[in-house]
Length: 148
Image (cartoon, rainbow, N blue to C red; front, top):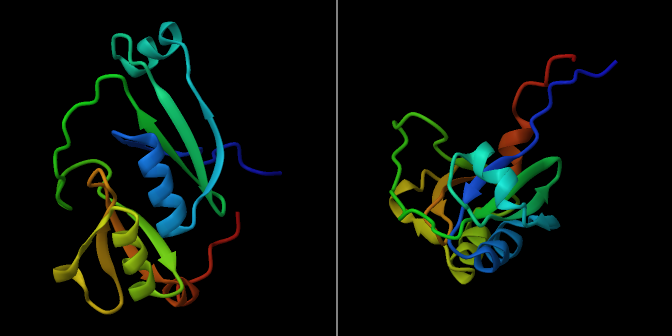
């Protein structure tokens, strides 16, 4: 029997859905899944925003689902630091960190050069979301998941 508790998705606010979609697909290998425009009458209560005008695009990377959220009136970006409460960053395993960094730049992101520790590096998506890049080999060295 499987557990009913499953991580559904992680949402990231963006200012331009198409630009962000190109970035996550082109730079990091995500794949488009689906999108929706929920009616304000439903989402305003859930999201606690008056008439949010939400456009949500869902992307997949393996079993991980990323929800890109574009609102009619987005708030300005505030650069988050790692010691702030709440979600700090996404972490993505890539085959080749230098090649991934080149794609990050190509698709409108920023590589934070001073964070390069050879094992990992931090980058930002076009809206400033912090993303840690790790080599696939790092994941292979982690202990196995405990049995469910």
